[in-house]
Length: 277
Image (cartoon, rainbow, N blue to C red; front, top):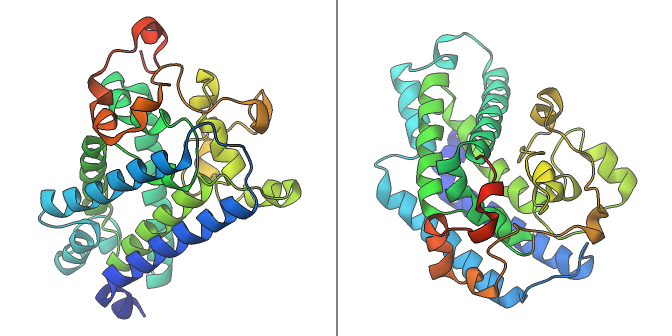
């Protein structure tokens, strides 16, 4: 099974990406949680253009990406898990959980280190939150994130199949929990003990700083709960809350050229209140 997955990495990733994108997009049409504040076509066109640009940039920037590095690590016995005798299934479970912790800590860092926040705020400047927001990140942040991920994979010695599973899960859950979708409240309360739900992650996109600096998880909810960054609901409620940042609220900042320039732009009178400073 592991060998089959690794041989078919690209089609597995593409099927998962477009399958989840399409499923959540249809769900948003059938049962939206919030009314959109900005034109959907404008946001989708630019967010998806950025997503595909980032994919090509990663392929061009790195001689080997996450799964390939993990495979090399297995061949050369790099890292902790490659030198720790565990059953294969347990090594995969431990690796996926540890990589999820790395992503949580990275996300925390991108909020609290000013230079990194300048990059990451492009993700938060989206005037709505929907399935395309889950892949809307600045290209420089994407490259830095991949560098951090590669270092973690080499140090941890994660099995290649675990990295592939994690990558697929991360992309799928990111699109799911950014979805503008409605879940029954009782089901949401149960589900968020395991994975990050749309209602849980939406709090993270609130214009209120204390809410923005909470719910950093993309996949598992455990790290927010254990490390004290969990917030159950937005103070204004999901219908009353404002999505985005206090600045960059004009529609022009939804266009791709402006998205790429956001890290270099000043925030005017809101500058002293900027997160991480």
